[in-house]
Length: 259
Image (cartoon, rainbow, N blue to C red; front, side, top):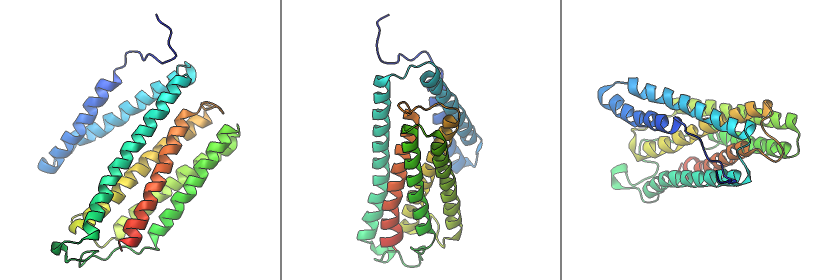
């Protein structure tokens, strides 16, 4: 066999099973909305989570115990994560486009005003400002963990990651409380649609990022990271900083300027 610095992946069932599990989720969503049948959607969520866990377990084994992730492979993984974050930027850009399209030139159908007549926006300097402080603080703690890992101070890195995970959970708790107090719903005009779609998908990204960092915390506790090889943590940290930046744009445009 020709020697290569890249990792030649062995046969794996997870791409096939994962694609089938992912396909069942949108189909299950349609069945739920049209026929009030929730079974396929729940099966899709369960099997997608299970397959993702097993797939990432294999990747952890390949990198940590088998040494397949050489410098060439790490460069490819970093590039893949950067391109994934770029696709996420485009994803949120679409929501901000919809928001500014309606807010900068309000249509007659919504009373030619923004926010639309009859909608009372959330207070700018209440829970949204607290959420902003929480996410900014979490960005500081994950950066602290990053520098601690590079310097070999694993106890400090563990403290920083634990703080970040707790702050992410606290943010989700505050977001849930905010949703229960809003006087409008996703069905209330274009304001409700853009507000809940943008903040809701951001909350989903916070949930994914918190889970990502929790896995990194467990891996750090199991000594999977070294001072020179911690690409899994780097991916999680990049993702978390992206989530922080999106919230800053979201807070300034929707909660402050849009109110």
